[in-house]
Image (cartoon, rainbow, N blue to C red; front, side, top):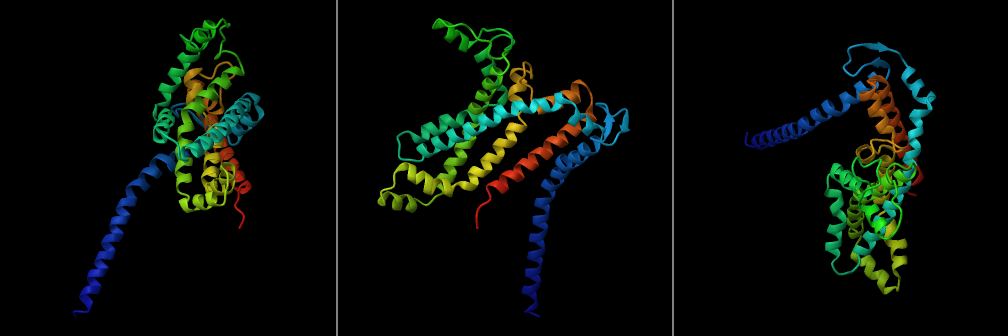
Length: 302
């Protein structure tokens, strides 16, 4: 009899642990299903329908929404603006990796510079967009030439420039804002990855007479390769699905619209929820395909 009591007690403890684990997982699972999987399923379902904003009139039209997307140039033309952000994201990654390498070396005030460079990422995106809209152009932030940057240019005898209403230039300005806003996140990720490499490896390289470029090439870059790949995947995803900064600063005017801005306008301004859902599905598939290609391209050799 005495031998069975510990076994029963152990069985009760296992059951209580199992119940505790289930309860802890239940709430996030329910929230994930409610606010992620069910809306995603509905979005996929809506993409085969012609429906208004409130679903008052719904008609099943099959693949017509997808046909409209792939046969109407204005929908896919906005993807060319993603090339600006894609180029900017790789510049951002290179700068973040360069600064992270410097800040992880033995320099004075390294922690101060880490905080300064990470601070923009802590600011709300809306606040960043409003600040830079005033920096480039005053008033409505689009059509006039009054702004902080133009004040500096005219102070030195230059002519004011319409930064946010000149096609092409506006996208360069928006990419600059995006780099300033998000470089802090890449910096922190790279610093954490670099600091995770054993100090003994650096000491051995120093004893062997390796210079800084050799340390970076043969120790740092291979050691943080998974983080570099992750940041590249996030960079491409962000470049394809950029939304907040161009929407708040220019509203997508003067050739600065993106595919996501086009999707939201289709849904809420033109009240074509079915077509907008199809656009969202297409965007999701593009991101998945690009991510898979990246992972295959940077697959580690075994």
